[in-house]
Length: 229
Image (cartoon, rainbow, N blue to C red; front, side, top):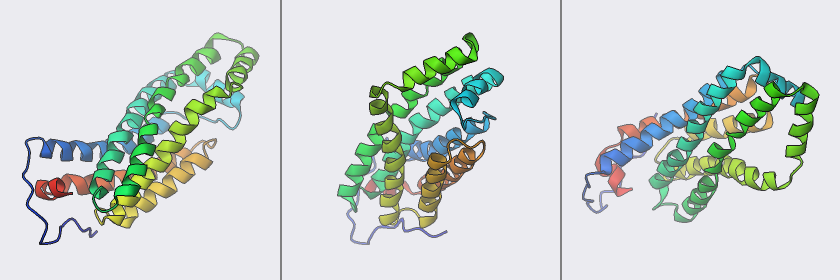
């Protein structure tokens, strides 16, 4: 694994501030933890959700797993935001315009952690009502188009934002191409095979590896290099 973390010899000296190492290590840990927590949350749910009825039945059969998985997923989604901002920081000087776009998209993705709370209501529906009534209410809630205006920007924003952040970090030669490839493929699998029992876990696993790889690079980076980026 080779990456370019050295700046040109003519780069000006940058004074290190007391929080330089804190920000670098914090960013590295967010990269390592975010994808890992999302991956772990999916492994906690042995579910089938090809249909809404199957999805709701999962809330009955695996109630405890789902409730705890939602907590893990919440923190995984939260940490995706500082993880994306860390990658963007690596490229802000070399790809400023694309970095701004990645920042905006990743910022929209903050809503993902809030959407997770819906899982608790779905579990409550499945356990408190007969199956046909729970299904009716679930379908009614899903028929409100305004919900899509909240969910879509968050889901699309984060999926595009984190991958664009990976891309600009790679273009800035801060990370190799492999973390980018793992992230893109993983998110595609996670998105387009969301109804499968295990493929979303596989996709999130690829994302976790790619992000952790980038996190290790940031963690090993010298403070002087980090401060100059």
